[in-house]
Length: 438
Image (tube, rainbow, N blue to C red; front, top):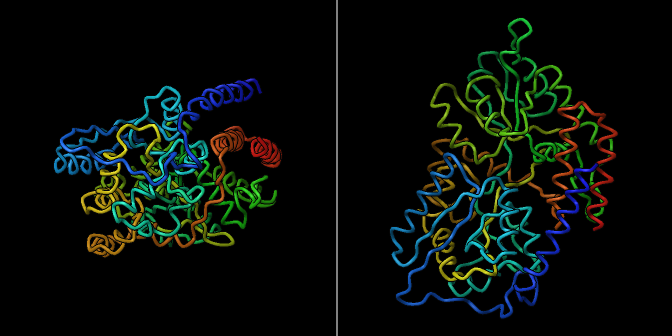
């Protein structure tokens, strides 16, 4: 209770400081500058350095650096410098601090659910005029990926490394045991339990794993017929029965070793390593992990990607990050040149997406020969795109950072501390309602 109180106080203090900082972003409405039709232009002969803050690491950072090098090599007057900021939460906090101090980047990668906070505080450039001035259509984006881009009809964020959670299967292992890729929760339970192996009391292989994250229980809530938040934005959007069903299912798998739930610290890395080393047969994680997983497995076994299994229906949240231009950036024109190039040049975002396995974000990418060939050569890359037809984001709120932490605490209590599921979810509901009323 003390820790939560301290966090609330620190958030209030941070918010107070940011009010003053955001006040400097004089804008007529969310996301637009005081002159919403004004577009900064590049000055002839001037050299620009564009600071790009991001949260990519490992193989995905390598892919990003490949894209940035391609741009820098062909744009002698603009050099993009990429700087790693840590996790999505770290990046969110650092952008807040940068706005307060005045040292903002020119482009920032923001987890899509966090964009609204900055847009509502008038801290982001409306990119609509830049698209119009450059004769680039805003209709190029794939349906389902712009829910966290538009605020008050202003285009404040561009879909970047967008993803959904998908299921990765060690197809070689399942085939060896005569098991089919599960399509329902019941089938998942059967398959994961059948994959468990022990040497005495020691578990040598678990059925499945997933990172510690609110993403996966959120997906399951929707699969069971609920929503994370209700349509009024006043409380959770699922019944007690749905919540109990989701966590009861997960705990049942955990108790039989059909589910290995990794420690919170580095859970994504741990889950990936469990899968690539054959210590689990099924992994739920981001579609953006496919490139790295494929590279790590290196042909040791066949990977097959699949939709997350359904309960009442197929459903998945979207995830990943968008890119934004802070209103206080001194290099808006140069930042836009890089963004425009990424969206329109095949060596830009299209190349990054093709290498990483993230979702294609524009219809141009989807129709490109590169993607048609890629999907033909390796159907695993297309699964997440096909799953988008079942995508729904039910956690859109300006106080999502608070709610996400509250949800994480509830998951920790249930999955690690064996807390009562009904009591924990009742407490979570009250906390979420309180946060939404702020």
